[in-house]
Image (cartoon, rainbow, N blue to C red; front, side, top):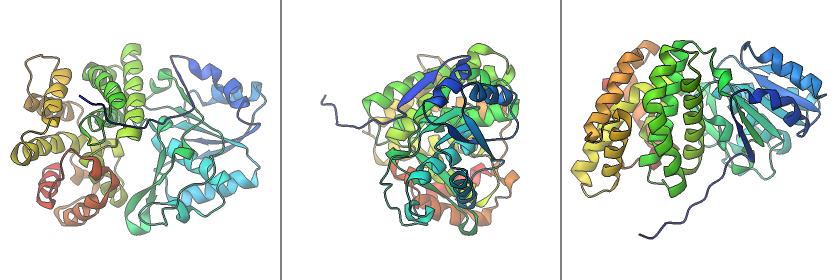
Length: 387
């Protein structure tokens, strides 16, 4: 069978391994001398990072992100970084922190205002200049943001989340140390872990899947099949933490080059309308979307080869060679129950919100990569069950 053409882009350099945080100072010193450090709340390894930067004579200006980033937050950060004369950016935290760091690095070198470059609510113009050097250090195993080419930003007044997106804003270095995730509590481990799982499942059945992303997804799905629950049960399980951090990285590599699907297509408007953790939204939607995708494919495209991919996913997740696609859905449903993922009603979503979410979801960029175009009625059914 002829191999279709594809493109693959990622961070200029990836350093992965237990304890590689120790290299952060020397790596940062090759990027600049005055770093704008975007970080989350206090992390037990933050003092060590600060010591390593100091030893490498990299001065630091700190900016703390305590919630999912908004366009206003990024504006504040860029203004502070410019005023301080920062020549590089370091992101140390979860997906929200890394997205903020990437957005700041992009706007430090591109002179237009943020709205010029935003999708949906802005002009959607392309970045013209390579972003300022950026070192991305994730402290959760979920988003894979350290190797993706976009930053998801909230626009509260419009009730949406939108992306600043360009290959020019890929981090210069992704420094991925699984040891940094050991301090995550079980609930955050569950939410971020389900996000990571979603991000190796959706690209595998995406209409933009390619041979390289397929490799990452296959590996990630098989690792997540045992490591997610193990990390949830024992946060100090080194093997499980390493495996889930690897799954997260693989998901970032895959989604940046193959796209996602209806889970993220719906998660974007939900996250823009309610203060709900992104990983929790994805976790609740994943088994429901998977089941509806299967039904839609069988009803409208029974010869679609993606159906066989759902059988493969089931075999990898259940680790049973005889497993069928429905067994994979059951596995996902059981995982949502075991991890105690709440219904979306817990975050304020009601039946009255569903038409708006469906309307916005149908326009979301992630929805375009779903293996089959879902109808408004099918999306409504998913959201009704997710409550």
